[in-house]
Image 1 (cartoon, one colour):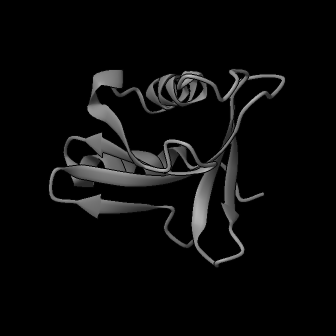
Image 2 (spheres, rainbow, N blue to C red):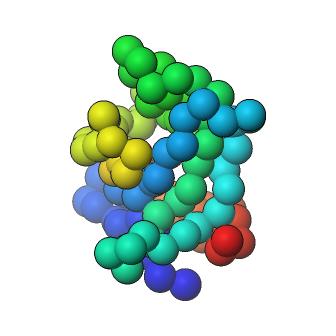
Image 3 (cartoon, one colour):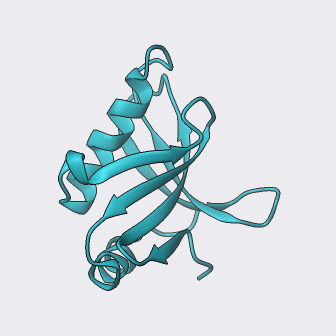
Length: 106
């Protein structure tokens, strides 16, 4: 499977495509963008106003990965559907956790 995250020295960068105003908060799977790059597809109920959808995304990822919200930062794409989320921690451990939790490609 193509990588939808990148290991860093102090954590990982997770590539996410967010869809706000969904019926429920859910991780949908891994999908390729038109550019050929893979990303995790997530949907949240929150609206994309005043950072509400971004906060809902971080909370959803926190539950899914069992990682504290304080360890996550949106490093790019705060106002875009395509986001890069930095998750601080042991990069190798986080990569193994992501690989084990990876939803099927859709």
